Amino acid sequence: MSAAPIRLVPLPGMPLIGPGDDLCGALAEAAQRAGLELSDGVLVVCQKVVSKQEGRTVRLSGVRPSPRAERIAAAWDKDPRHVEVVLGESARIVREGHGVLICETRHGFVCANAGVDLSNAPDDDTAVLLPSDPDASARRLREELAARGAGPLAVIISDTFGRPWREGLVDQAIGCAGLAPLRDLRGARDLRDRELLVTVNATADQLAAAAGLLMGKDAGIPAVWIEGVAPEGDGSIRETLRDPSLDLFR
Amino acid sequence: MSAAPIRLVPLPGMPLIGPGDDLCGALAEAAQRAGLELSDGVLVVCQKVVSKQEGRTVRLSGVRPSPRAERIAAAWDKDPRHVEVVLGESARIVREGHGVLICETRHGFVCANAGVDLSNAPDDDTAVLLPSDPDASARRLREELAARGAGPLAVIISDTFGRPWREGLVDQAIGCAGLAPLRDLRGARDLRDRELLVTVNATADQLAAAAGLLMGKDAGIPAVWIEGVAPEGDGSIRETLRDPSLDLFR
Image 1 (cartoon, each protein chain N blue to C red):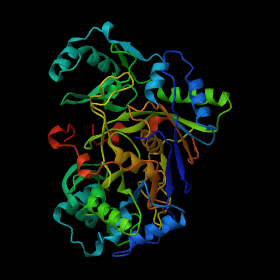
Image 2: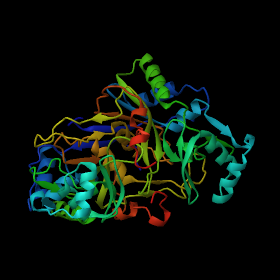
Image 3: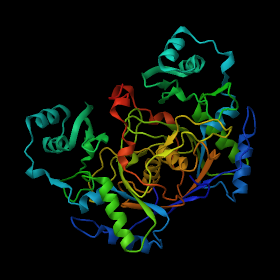
Image 4: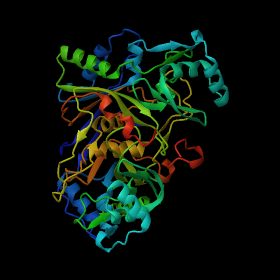
């Protein structure tokens, strides 16, 4: 991708974002305060501020849990209203156990609780959902930033996901614009000029993970600017979802 | 972790590394050429140069495949000698299909072909295995660099792993020294002072993924220096391996 250094710069001091707020303006101002020109780089924005801006929240007090949600909640000592919201966001439950629901979301992401999160929510009665179309969220932010004179740039929407077999969360890309999420090296050559057969790098996920170093849930950093990575290509995060017929883990 | 920028600097121009070569010296010289002082940061080194330096290679021409390796190789159109080496490195086969063997290595890592790789090998007859104790490899490199005046620093050994459900490879940590591989935020507070219940960040994996942005298999960059991340704590990469009794994916 690049042999020059890469720099990850946090965008601190963002205001709390609510439905309909000017997220693009807040990002642009935070970048300006950090002395950044949002040009020739990748802006990684955490899902939560995007969801809040898009009004993708649910008031738990208004949720009537279904019998299925009640059953799952009782089995795993969870709030049945939270489980009801999770079920509503899920295409299927992948695994259930140890107090964890691993779900496939309607977008096709596999993650705990279908990405429905109670931490860093506006209040105790609010659950924050994933954006309904994170690619579109990224595209919109990118266009709004371009209209303000920023760019060329790519935008990634990220969330922290758990992984099978490994402890700990790593940020993944759930939406992108202005960037090919996968970098296909198949057909390229290794250092001995041997053809690489299976190497496809998940560039968008690597960028999200890198930004995650600055985005701890206690850090109050909802966006990170990455310099030194030229945004190449374009594509949808759906390209990173494995074809079910080729997925050994279904 | 930090609200200051993070810088990822590639260490280019490394010589090809063979068994017993002075890897530490080559890294120190590459850092010097790049104008880096290896102090207050994290050095991520790709597994392949470490394995080559440690002689963790197998000559395929000397391998006698077992009947099991022959059967698996025939089913998936693979080299039975390669499969035999993979089986020798595996504690168990997790999944088998679509030409891919997902294995749990003797260390406990779950990855394709137990990490046995034919790309960027010294020649067509050579398979490169994972280091037998990547934590110890990291510790040794860290001590050798300290003896040359470098540090404080952490060392991570990384490899590119596939993931369930998602296309594309992301680098993960397979060994570390001078760094707590997980950053446990449980008990910390979110922005509304609500206790975080389940947030453990996989810091070592995030650092490995970030370094991976500069380490494409065609790039010839076997090491990346990361500044702006203070190495905190210490620990073994084994801490990132999920307790089998809690693993929903067994």
